[in-house]
Image (cartoon, rainbow, N blue to C red; front, side, top):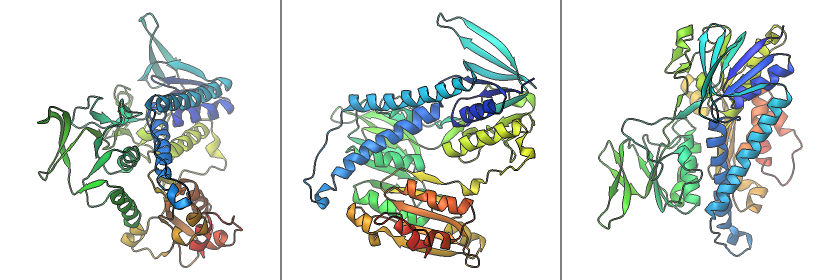
Length: 462
């Protein structure tokens, strides 16, 4: 009898686990309450990056004069942009659904709950409004329900002027001014996006640098670029209230109040202060699954405290990246089907590459310079600015740099950061080196394309 594998959540972790396990011979059932492909992925990640790409195209036109062309002033067609976002979402959703169906995965639209050691209850609502329930037996269960935007008690988003991230793809109107609360990855991407579309943007920064978890040199490049673009940075300010008011002219505004007494007025405000796991109502603790702040506690196999119940994706409490979620899903499928008994590489979260789609782009992987110094580890740091790279000059965009961190004794690449155009693609070279324990000489002696931005990688490795 085939292994009965039930997956709750159809995002990158769930659908990757489903297709991989099905290929390995499992009898797979995937339950999704919102959208196959993942709500966070298709309602957050893809739409935001689509809008950022459009904003980037607008920003590029502002540099045309430096390339021997007349500067253009394109106007945004909100209806066309909305259609473009929906088209991309539907295409990706259709592709994912077709792949799952082709592998024989049983797809169920409904809400799931673990009701026993090996039982999952599914509640479905029919087109006529009738509600039905079904209990599905399982030899193994994967929880991959993702996260949702965190909303504090002091803020009441209304979807019109006080927005969470999912209200912005695209907004009903492009705001004349917007205050972004939260200076992490999502926050700075929204600053870049709205600024590119012409809004006056203020960023509330609770600490003394944007991207507090990133390399200070990386954050400094982004801060400088924001300031050049007219973004106001409110550093050392923690928002404590967001409310709608009517000003003296009779116009509606949003006021963001901070703990140090400062206030910011704008037409709109966007809340981007993290996320919370979607584990409520799943019945996990009732069957013995250990949670920590709502996140499922997992081991290196992505197993919970109940061995046949796994967790993957954002709600596993690891890195909130689609690439990590997909790889976790693959590893779960292999473990469920017994492949851990043969050669099996465990996930090393410290070697996951990540990117921030601002302008300039930011990407990093592996050991960070600040972390190495904090731990007393000896490292070699080499840095090359894009201003010395011919292709960057050709592109009329030489912002940023490539930084490679290596072991001074062995030359093994330990990590790296890139700030600049196409950083999300370029980081793949360093990520491969980190994962495969390559040396800086392996990058330096590679015969790379000229002229290309990747030449900065070889120069930094030299």
